[in-house]
Length: 462
Image (tube, rainbow, N blue to C red):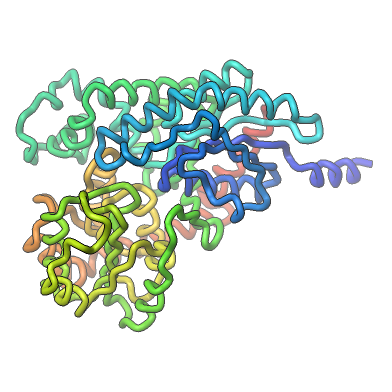
């Protein structure tokens, strides 16, 4: 009789989870990866999404999707382009989605059954308004943090940094260490926070306070990578913390791209020698001006190294795509490089020809590079990217930061340091050690594997 009940329970599953991602590429991907992970553990999944940057539903026939399109933000792409506008966009999403999200969740709860109970809501940490909805409908909320533990610690430290006067300093190039949040320097703190102004401070305050009100936090990271900061995070957020990442390593081809991927990137890499190519991509949001673009191009051409360069449409401010290229410069670039609008990044980083990754240092990109053992060149521009880059260089010692912006001489020098010099070989060795730790943490008995088991047991208590 007991065995029959167990079989029936397995057939019914462990209940349903409601997941709500922030509608940006770098946030949708980890949420859908987490959904796949939890689905593999027996949970039914409903993805609630906005019409703005909605996910590709056809790629996930095993999930149920609910669109809150009627009041979702439209025309939001005009707000993208710099840190201030991204902050305004996040603020807008939190404001306009409250009513339709609340109504959607209420409807789902009323339509649920004893055979398929809704266990909890898992929402992106930046969607801070969802805590009020969860409280209203008496549904436990778990926060997904799509960035690193140490970057969240930096955000949590903003009031202290303000009190100490760091954000009032004028020297935006200061190399002086910030003792309160090592290994950041004063210039990192200024770039992380100063451009965001009061709107950013207000938003971060809400994110932090509503995260503390949640039932738990899921991190797309693993214990061995951020062991030193984990006790501090547990003090700052005294709720269950689950480090179950890297999410994308649980399943192959686990990215859900909002942009069409150019598969010629892989066929071009197939023709290159092992460890001979620099991969260049600044993610789905970052933008540069024409001067920086030309400096990048000359730096790449002058390095004399092969490179695969992702030039996303719109990445050059004021241009559609490659039209700013002077003919001579395009010829110089074409001689050694291959340019695409978007690439299948996980496959590119795993390719034997890829030797180095020049990145904006978003957390997904940083994790993916670590998972494949590829050293990095970092050009962070805002938010958690500054912290990620500093950890890549100063803590893990698996890459370097372009300290003086995007200048051709600096670029050429950095590429040669990582791809040719002994320094780069040592970075590669340290990256290979981190890659081994990734592989171990996901195996049975590994830290992420055990944390995932704990998360599943935790959800089943609701």
